[in-house]
Length: 268
Ligand SMILES: *Cc1c(COP(=O)(O)O)cnc(C)c1O
Image (cartoon, rainbow, N blue to C red; front, top):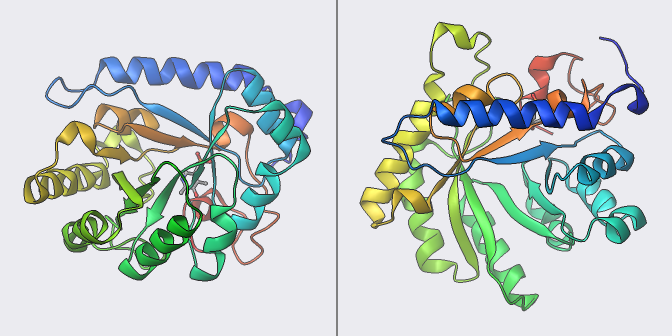
């Protein structure tokens, strides 16, 4: 893999292309699905603050990170605090209880996409309550639609009980959607990634069981290699990293091999 210097990669140009591709994919989305404008989350993990600033200066507002320490460092850096007042951070990594307090201190934390169990929900709820924020903390429930051991997330069959728990027991949390990483489906030309369909099915079941409107439950699915397919299948939130910022070299994930495949497992 070629290592690029930050300056070699034109983030503004890459962003523009991704936005065009999102727009085109949106046109192809089935009319039977809620026509929600897909949100682009620029995944900046392992990339320097300078690249976040560059994307921000090109109009990007939503950013995703999956290591709590890295997110905390970036979000509290002088440059980000000074120059990016409207930035909104999505936490998309595996969350451990020991990291909850630090994560909740992230300025402009917008949503935690990876909740997958009741204990963590309870802890987030009570920690957020103690912080006495005016708004509830937005939460997505991560589903392991591909049943891979390397992926976190609750089983599809657990989605109804977990969302129900959020609604009944966690008044400080605001359930906004479901998220999946999914199996690496290398060739979208082969057809639709079954994980996208599985997540949609989960949403239908959750909505029906708990009396929610489909339009009120987002689907976070789709990454660099498949975000267009995901949007056609109803994604409302795509998480795109390497196509915007260039390939990663995994400086803070020494346990994984240096391959694109390891980029999409979320084990830390
Ligand atoms: C890294 C990561 C992404 C972005 O992956 P790319 O292939 O670089 O677009 C999206 N979602 C999660 C959960 C990730 O960890």
